[in-house]
Image (cartoon, rainbow, N blue to C red; front, top):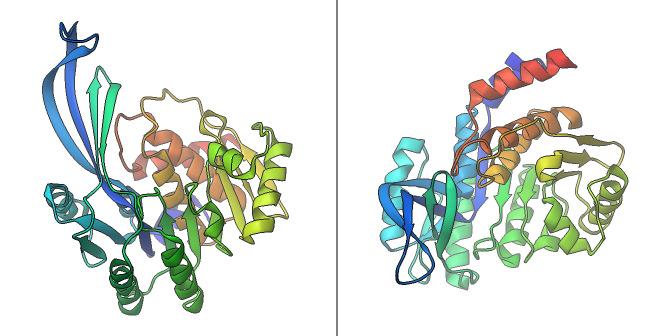
Length: 329
């Protein structure tokens, strides 16, 4: 496909995003002195902003590329959920896949920032698994969306906040298999080995090293070995390992490619993984080749780290960077 065809194909996609949703709040100010009460900076408050985060940010990336996202997550009955729902209309996201819980709070991550530097982060969250009653209600939400809409790819975005328990993962994977919907995964450590037989598995370098116990470097031979170990245990089709400033590695057992990242001025790595899994999943769903999936994902992830805070990909900038990469090749 050429660049125009890729973005036209993205606009035809319905993407189901399942996982841990959250609110990212930013308290921004300036530091002029050290507190007389303790050796800490005094931040003179200037502004506050809240954004959708976690799996909700994955959904935002899907929408930013022209696709339609259906978001399934869990929020509490609290002020955090009020914040969350106040941000939904602007994002163009439906509430049909969201479940209220009386047993847990809405995950809210509050960052204090001065001169584009993070000073501290305060997390309000629960990380225990959903109760059996909640899990049943949540799975009904997922079933409902599958029955009412044609879904082209399902993304599981795991932040270990309790939504993607072993039970829910297995139920969702079974459901998607019955409906012939490809599944892509951005895992975390707790249920890393539960994601069996998926279409694309996207851990980062640290997650792979911790899960496999291998003394990895970012060299291609080490990455091939790690990917082989992952595939032997998970039987997935495609591995995509993000390597931070070293780019991405992708393979499907037959072929492997290591793509270096472009030179970037990194401001904030928050949310880059959300962008990569969204772009890779959409690229997979429209049938792009491995190298094309890696190229788009790498460019998109690199783009968002240049901005402070969690932000979705900019479609026009991505289009320009893809064209530049194709021309350079």
